[in-house]
Amino acid sequence: MDVEVLNNELQFKAVRSSGAGGQKVNKVSSKVELTFNLEASNGLSDEEKERLKTNISHRLTKDNLLLMQCDESRSQHKNKELVIKRFFELLEEGLVVPKERKATKVPKAVVKKRLKAKRQTSEKKANRKPPEIE
Image (cartoon, rainbow, N blue to C red; front, side, top):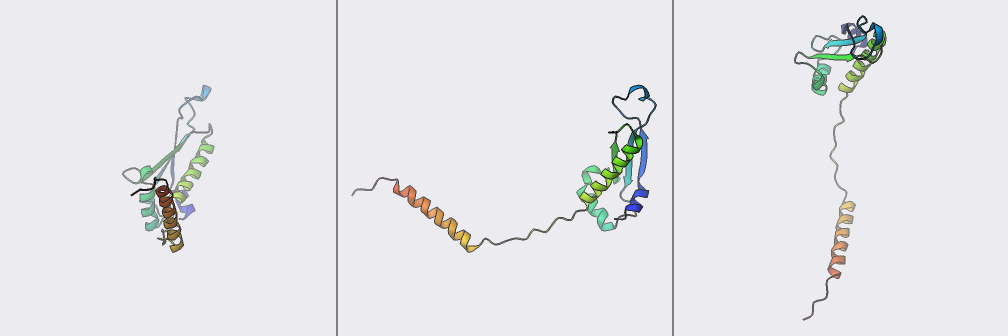
């Protein structure tokens, strides 16, 4: 993953933010929308692209575009910084390779201990019954 190349491939658009804003609400475009084309990216290897397609598929459009937005701050620059930070965090989470599960065998001592406990419980319950008289 080449961070500098990815940074250059990001596209931003400033849009009017929803919610309260005061007098300047109809003039200022503080909400930032980030668009990233996963297919056309040169900062990611083919293997990384495939892993991202599977891991963050719920965040991608049909054309493999990643759309993110931020309107937390009233400052456009702060929103841009926040959305870039979130973008790279999302990429890092999506590129994590899960550990392979190793099948383990149950130790003989554990099996013996379980069977012994079952036997003791069985004897305890059997002793609760009244004796049989012939």
